[in-house]
Length: 198
Image 1 (cartoon, rainbow, N blue to C red):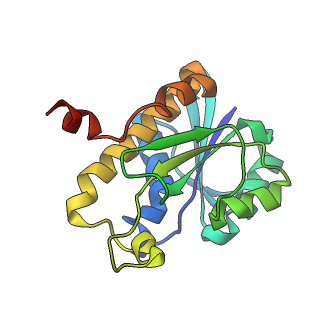
Image 2: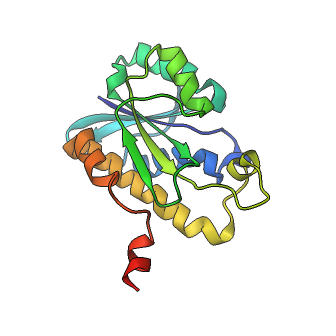
């Protein structure tokens, strides 16, 4: 089984914020691949279906970001599945918008949601898809940047970054995580190709 876990915060207030990139990617993936109806399960919102013959689930924890591991641990216990079958999808300020980074394992890098998952699962051995949301503009703090709506001038690229992450997850299912990692980690941020051609 593949379980894609999007990290974010529940509620309308956080819906279009950079910190909810994981939720947005999972919603778009589930819609595009016609997964089943969303249901309240595993302390979150869960959808499941068949994609190209594979069993795929999408989970959005509703525990708020810092307790995301509670929902993931419950899903692992009841589905059941191994941590190696999880791909955690979350925002990363150290990557510019339009850039993805896939890794098979690793630390939390200061991300509270990832830290919670590591603590609750007792392992770092799960894959992650980091979605670039960029650094805040001058004069704005990290918290305000992550928890405010994406600025109007940045929305198009943010949406395109979400689409790129959906494509990466589709490749994970079709060709494996290694293939997706090789393809997307080496790509320049969206928009840089056009700028370099001028």
